[in-house]
Length: 164
Length: 285
Image (cartoon, rainbow over all chains, first blue to last red; front, top):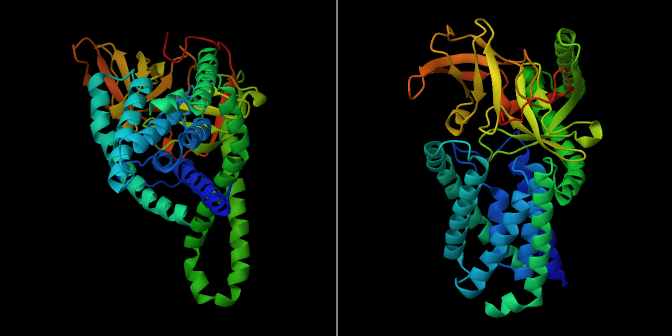
């Protein structure tokens, strides 16, 4: 690994840990109304856009395992879904999308919707359909928008980190 | 893209992924145990989470003490160092005092329920994306905790342990739709089922339903556990905020505000054993 890659790797590790800390510390959060940004998720989407397939899949796996250990989701949900999301984002960016800010907005928005929808179906399935829809519109959609905004900012930041 | 799917890279990713899926599912279905990789990540990250919790608590306590004595700081700058020292001590004293208060309150519960065995635990992470305020505590199998053990604070019932690792455990709160528990109105002894749902959880409430139409529950009544399910009887849950009829007018329900503020819990007690333990599962099945 050359020096610049090493540098960006360590900066990314630090950013990942910082975002996990902000997300799960429980004493302060970036919550605005019902909207809660999913910071580590925004981070892995952006990392996946800017990495190779294998790097993004393993980043997703490591982040998924750490988040499974900390968050309230169970049965290795994030360890399973994060690598799949990361790998598919990388493949889409390599073969279908241009790697630009617009793609970062579209991909983070679309994948956040998919992630939260799967989570609602799997973990809140004992609630009624109307409750799930109401939750989706009142909380999930604002959270997706918020996460997308964070992803947009992270994309700009990551582009600068890569150039270091 | 086709070349990628035929490459060795993809085969490596796929095999690691399959191992992760198999392990996660095997451990998940075999008794709500954390998968080994999640458990190891939990063990590795636990000290950091403990540290971040301690730092957070320290900052919070210090700020609250600092705010209280801000005028003194302005008028007497010469004594600021000494004052800061005293404040630190005062914060430590307050923490010890609240800790004593915490254990004293549990002593009251313990005196009323001699069969209870407690294990104190600290909240080390909270999932802000969880609408039911689930959190993780710093005790696990190593402290003889088990899945479905009830979790309480001195204010009342919090929830139960839904997933467990060696040194950490995940707590599902009573706001969750995955938990159904038998409950009683403490004044009238009317019994029903307490369950959370997504909409009420956003307001920090849960629903006490299946109450007979003839029941005489009233707003402000206290709701306690009935002893059916995984919880012992007599644990305080919350107070009734509103009463309504169910969709088919067969029974009535009440919306309950739990006594516990789930967003600010720092310390909890896990009831590791009690008389009659091992009833229905958390889903009430």
